[in-house]
Image (cartoon, rainbow, N blue to C red; front, side, top):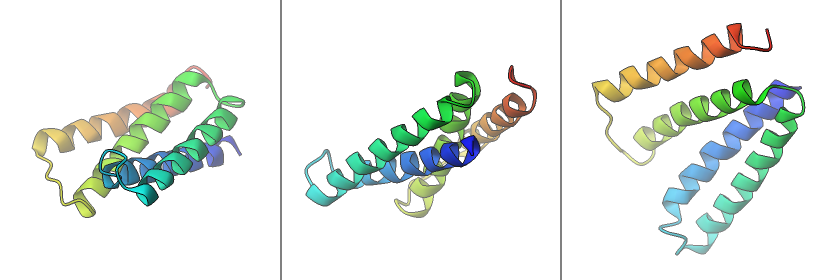
Length: 107
């Protein structure tokens, strides 16, 4: 169950970040409301995750996977460009999250 909470926290972060960009500096009402609701849900599920998993694994997974998914959304929806260094960096972040979850302090 903690990994389901973590997944929901990551999804909330990614949705919130996408709406944050769409809110245009909080000048558009509906994207702003969606941003606030998404981040509230994100932090609620992140707090539920922390009841079961260590902070280091939770935060690394949340931040790392959130970054990867947010990058994908930025490329697909907002048509932003990434370069080779960005791709290599994302691969290294994913490797770090996998290693931490596999061999981290809770294992």
